[in-house]
Length: 177
Length: 239
Image 1 (tube, one colour):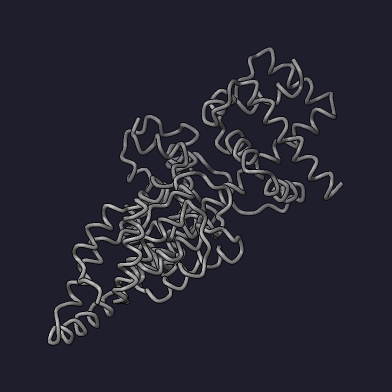
Image 2 (tube, rainbow over the protein chains, first blue to last red):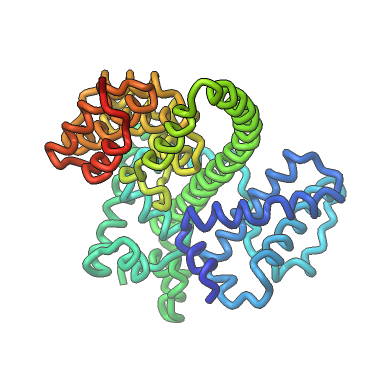
């Protein structure tokens, strides 16, 4: 596997920064033809990087045949198109299905429970945040988490996760119960 | 199989067909189970949105730094022109200042970040991580300010230490001197501070204090005492 993809999987900040800086100017030039404001393009570029990281984490580009740049720009193009087509609601998903697997909307929800969970999550200690992030966001299984967080064995990771979930529920109970 | 493990396996995408059947069964007929499951789904959404938001902030931060740098380049260019003019002026009187600058440049190196490794995942961008990020990216005017805030809010001595070094890198030597002299440092940073303070004295043309401090460093064999020896030999003797 490409070394950069390997590092992206671990959310390595140095690699993310490198990639961001390496392709930024090219992306701006490329996106200029779509007549969007620069701030909007940069916003899209940032979202493209996030999608790239997420797809890497989920193992969806382990066997990427194209270059990382091509892949990143394809995501960006997709996002620019959906931005441009926001009004017409006509998106050619078929063509882009293989490129952009992460289609979850990153915008805020109005679900009150989700909002409570977010607040509670931010009240957790770093260790707990980390383990929940690995499990729910990066979709790592307990074996991988055991290794990544250097737990002695899977049972320790499992009980640590349970403890964090109990804490989370307790915080919600105390604040909203 | 207990319900918690079933839900866990669901998220690991690892239910076998028997477990899958049991899972669907419970979802249909056990309201506490479906409630629990829905909690986990919502938690996944919440954690994902928060993680994404954090990453987005990080990227926006890189962007701000880039824009800051561009501005800095302009300032540096302006500063460089002014420096050249001053140097040319002072050259007429003596070439000491030129030598001084070279000498300083050959000894001054910002102390590496040993407090907050940037590559680590920090869950929420804190003042601390922002300060070190700016520091590592060479935005010293910004990092000086951030460390100053950090020092006053946390009372941590490393914050003042890095504030001082940021100020030096931003060529604000008088301010750096003030920070170094008014903070009480723990052992870890005290001896390192002395080395940097000696460079500040040197840069400010305070020959007496430079010698006193360098002698102290050499005498106690503390941080960078070998360099201190070399520097002392290159300096004009105190009057």
